[in-house]
Each structure stands twice: as C-alpha cells, then as structure tokens.
Picture 1: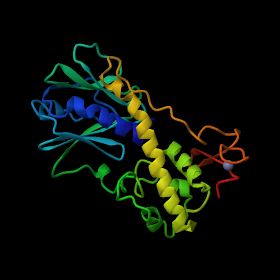
Picture 2: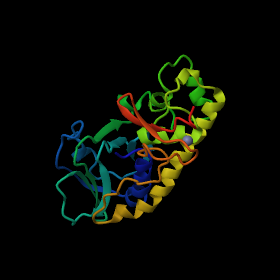
Picture 3: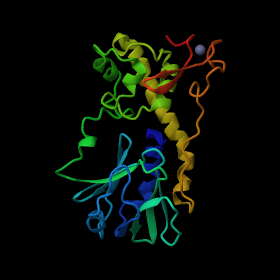
Length: 270
Ligand SMILES: [Zn+2]
C-alpha cells in the first residue's frame, strides 16, 4: 500500500512532467473508484493549465486557478506519465492528456483510490481536521506530548491517528517506536516528554529515509511501463518476527493491536 513516502515520491516525480502543461482532454474509463470520479472534470479541466502539485497527508493536490484535483492512491493506485500513444492497460481508469502528447494516467487494480475535485471556496471535508505534516516544522518536539494528555489508547494507535499527525502508517509506526526504544503497548497518556521528543525525531528520520531511498524510483515515472514499485526498504523490526533484534540479544515479537500487526523487541523497547 502506498504510504506517505511513496506519495511524496510520486509528487516529486510528477512535478517536472505536468506543471505548466495545458490539458487537452480528460478521459474517465471507469468512474467508480472508492467514490465516483466527478464527470464534470471532462469539462472543468479541459484547456486548463496545471499550476502546481503538492501533497497533504496521502493526498496529491493538483492546482488550477479555480480549484484542485484531489487524488488518493488507495491500496494499489499509481500514477504515471507516458506518451499518449501508448496502449492503455486494463486498470487505467483515468487519463489526462497534456499538450506535449503525453498523458498522466491513474492505474488502480483494486480501485480503492480516489479522484475528486474541490473548488477554492468549497473544500472537501476529508481534508479538514488533519494533523500536522510529520516532516514540517508544525510537527515539533512538543506536538505529540501536547496532544497526549489523558489518552488511554496505546502509543502506536496514537501516532497512527491522522488527527494527531498524518502519514505514519503501520510499518512506519513499528519502525519509529523501535528506533525510539518505546514499547508499542505503552499508553499514549503515560509517556514522558523526553520520550515523545525522541519518538518525534524517529518518525522524521524513518519517513525521510524512506523518501530518500524512494528517489531511485523516480525514473519510473516516465517509463512506458510506468508503475512505480512501492519501496522495499530496509526494515529493522517490521516483518521480522522470531528473528534476532539488530540492537540487543532479544527476539522480535509480533502482536496484533487495533487489528493491525505490530512488531517490536520486548527487550529493548519499554
Ligand atoms: Zn532489542
């Protein structure tokens, strides 16, 4: 599943290929994704110039003068820019043709992704109430601690809550807690300021490393087969149950928390 680093890499890959390009036509091949793709996009986007692309949480935002195209990759989505003459594949559901004979195509076999529109004066509710971006200054060393008072949920569920901080997915939550030496079973409201300081730095490091590693897949965006593979990065605990801890002589354990797999070292995470 594409996580924040993949979405950020997608944004960086698309940027030089689509910004300042004019849209010549829009094509919806399968309107029912997670939600229906608004049909008005065929007219709304035609002859418009792409001003900018940005990311908020796991949403890609493509700016036009009067609004934004909002795209989410869901479980299996990917976006590529290819010559428009390339044949479509079965799971290409949406295409924007650009004025240089290339096309931005949305590919999504499981169709949990979404393509939506918001006007400048009428923003989508799903983009409201999102917590700070983990790599921004808004997510500082006090953000987590200040949000933690009275929270009885476990710290892993706490950092995965997009109202608290966005983009910390299941893998990155386990990895960040390991790096900070914090047990995923610890209660969010019973964690010290110093430990939250360390966890904040860990989250930033884990996500930045993933984005930097992902830079090597950037070339894929202009490939004909252009489906960026999701990152296979070096993981310290995730998926390593029953294997030796890389930091101590403990053994990595797998538990289930909030219906999600958690991996941790009971010996060096407290
Ligand atoms: Zn250990």
